[in-house]
Image (cartoon, rainbow, N blue to C red; front, side, top):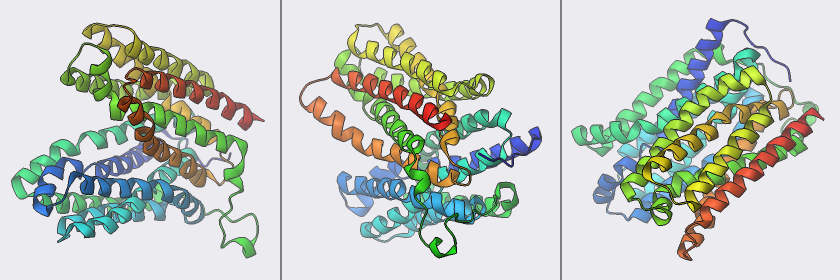
Length: 400
């Protein structure tokens, strides 16, 4: 695909920093509500299920809207779509702090989800087109890590703000800061500007989205790739604190620490994986090796008796290997995207992550209800193996 990369290290670093900061806000606002749920439940007089519905609506709208956001990025440019989405997400959060009743949270959650949908297609379109090829995988790795940091900050900051000023003021303050961030990105629009893409079918068809890039074999297999890896790693994220005490002689506290260490190691692996991908360029081989090792380690955690030291080491190693493949994963998708369709392709394949996250409880929950405590580890390993197969197929199909 064509690039308009700025082959200057300082420009690359600045661009990666701007997009990384934007991605931080996406993940930050995704989890500003859960730390406040105990206070919101008492204040609003609602159930945990009703509070969970807010997050479900946000996630579903975000996943469904990513495809449309990708088309908007390619048509109008990320310099318009990205700050608009940031403003929607932050503005919805601010309005939640002012909402007088629970039912107003539900449409605001839908607005927030629509705002969140723009980040992946916009961010990856900018990085793919404007970062120098020799630094691109490292740019992807920084993008991944800044998102992880965005998840880590709200549990502390939102509880502190709520303790000092109340949960409503905490949401208003967070939303206001998000609007400032959106304004800063909008003012820096030249940094992330891309040329608008003209519809190849002619003016008469321009009002309808061109779905042809999404029907290509590499892109469809990329969607399966993201779906499978989301189901595997989503099981670790959502269920590992529950699973580990059932299959090893450990308590819930150790299981929670195990999960935290896994994701810290995953962040470190992503940084290392960017350098590895830029140096060796065999993205499918990197994915195969990293996920193969992660699958073997997590399978061992589920089926082999281990002490706490061995479990800690295995969890950190599995997290590092799983994180190290993420820049190569994104490079494979970039290679599968036709010229001028990066936004819509990344929007489409990243919707597979949201779909996988929705499916995880539906698959793993019944296993636990029926007492198959070790089976989820086999499910993780099988999903990772299918991910490896999909990565190989993406590379071959894209090369063909």
